Image (cartoon, rainbow, N blue to C red):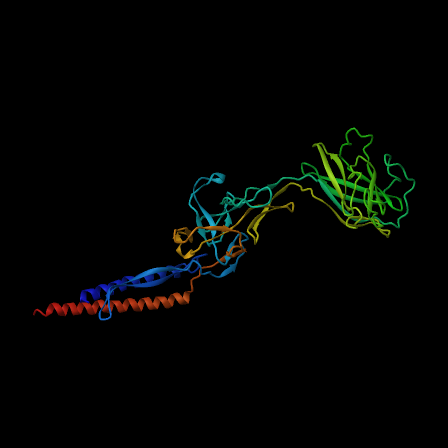
Length: 456
C-alpha cells in the first residue's frame, strides 16, 4: 500500500473518531432530557484488497448505533398527567401546524415518542415538553374505545350535566316484633295512624339537578304485611288520580305469584298499590326483582323513579325479621347534580378520566401503546420524536400491557438512558484513538518527505 494510502486511511480514522466524539457529546448534553435515547458508535472497516498474501487497508467509517429499545430509569414525579412506558413501545403523538383552540391544524404524519412529560395546555390538549400532542382512542357511548382512529386527546367536558334520579335502592329490615299500627285503613285512604312507625328520608335530583326530598313511611298492618307510603314534597299530584297518595302493601313469607312460597321474612308479593306501579301479577321465580315505580313532577315533566326492594323470596333487600329497630343497610339513588371540572388523571390501563366536583368521573379517551418490529430503525426527529421507516416495520397500535408492549406507569417519567460514566470512558478512547491517527498522518508525511528528498 502506498504512503499516500496510509495517510488517507489515518485521515478516515480521524473523521470516524470525530463522529464518535460527536455522539458522546450529544449523549452527555442530553443526559437529563426526558425520554432521550443515547447513540453509540459502530465502527465499520472498508477494505480495498485483502488476500492470504496481501492486505491493503482502505478506511474506517463510524456509524450511529441507536438504543431506542434500551429503557431509561423510570422516576416518579408530581405531575399526575406524566406517563412512562415500562417495557417496549411508544406514545403516538401529533405535531401542530397552526390554528387555535378546537381548530388546531395537525400534521398528517404520525410521530412517536417516549417522552411522557405531558401537561394540559390552555386549549385542553395534553402536550409534552417538546410540543407534541398525545393521541389516543376516543370513547364510544358504549364505554369502549374507538380503535379505528387516533386523535389528539382534548379535555373539553368541563361540566357534568345533571342526571335526574331514576332508581332508588333500599336494603333494610322492618322489625317483625313491632306492634301493629291501629287503626288500619284501606290503601286508598290515609295511612294508619298520625305518624309512621318507621321512616327513611332520601335526597334525589330533578331534571335540572335540584335536590329534592323523598320520604319512605312504613306502618305494620299485621304480622306479615307492611304498608308503604311515598311522600314527594314539592311534586305535583299524579295526573287523573283520585288522590296524591302513593301507597302499596309489601307482603312477606307468603306465596310468590305464580311461584313457590317465600321463606319467612322475605318479600312474597306487592298488593293494594295506589299511584304506584308494582312488577305485575307474575309469575315470578325466587330471586326475581321486587321493584316499585312511581312518578313525580317538579315542573319539568314526569320523572319515573324505580324503587328496588331486592328480590322475591331472597333476603337481599327488604326483609321482615325479628327486632324492634328499623335497620337500614343501603339507601341510595342514581341521580347526579350539576358538576364542574375538578381535575384529570390517567389510569394504568390508559383511560383518561375527567373528575368533577359532584363525585362523578367521565372517561374521554384511552392512551394506546405503539410497537414496531425494529424500533432502532426509526427515523429520529427533534424533541425526542421518531417517525416510521421501511426498515422499522409497520406501527402496531394496541392496549397497554398486551401483545408484547409495556405497561403504563402513571405519574412517572422515563429519564435518559445515558450513563455518564460510560460516556466519559468512550470520550477517553475517542481522544486517544484520534491522537494515534494524527501520529500516523505525521509519520506518513515525514516518510513522503523522505521519499521526495531521495532525488537529492
